[in-house]
Length: 315
Image 1 (spheres, rainbow, N blue to C red):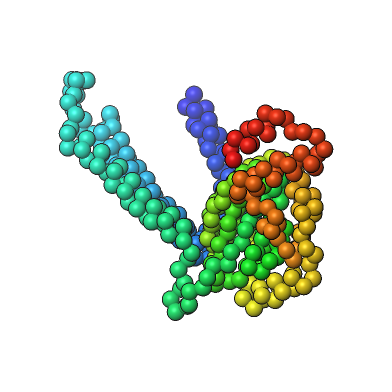
Image 2 (image 1 turned 45 degrees about the vertical axis):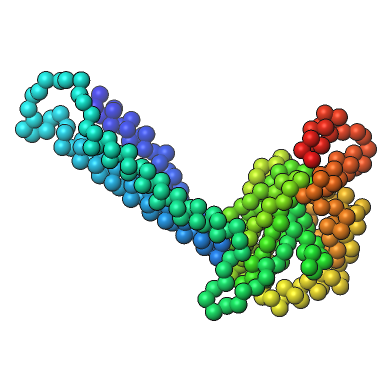
């Protein structure tokens, strides 16, 4: 019976052992732990601080737990028999200690977290010795299941890919033409939501040149997994050369073409020498209404009146 019990315990540990064994079959890439910009670096520092802090708590708790079960075990040497008295009065000192300690833990975790969150709501500070640069404004608009990146200063727009200069803050202005999504470039920082009828702002910056993966991190239907985009971080000179090429060679983005792109579905990368911001802004009341009219025209039938009224109620 004892052998069977031991065998069952070891079998219970088998799934955990397989996880550790299989983890060696390939390289585990944790992009969020390899920051490529100041925003990602500050979030990485917060993650590491929190992990070490919580690891310290685990060590203390398990050390005390081990001490108690060994020191006060029933078959310990020299144990004296005593009457069991369930009507014990609590220890006031201990109760005060175990109330104060969690409060201190919460404070020590909250202060750096709140400080970091407020810092992320403004452009990253330039590194020592570098001049401060104005953020590059990029409107990131989503529609099922693609990304539109509008550069109002350069008057160009891209679909499903993005070019940014290094060592310059990027001010993403996020909105959506339909479903709620979230822009996330793990190597450069955390995600923030894109919502129809409103605009959110996300500041990111790349320190190193290279290609980075971006995606929608909020589930929005069957095309969710493929709603990705590529970020090309390059020098200011290369970025300016790229924008000039798009301005000279790419076609204009007409309202008809934009309406076609708004249809639910996947599409390849595209470039345009104008933006959809010239005739629709999805973060406004009219921009939300544009979605309703757009779907009514595209599918040649009326939408369900209840659905229309429900959408208009949010305007």
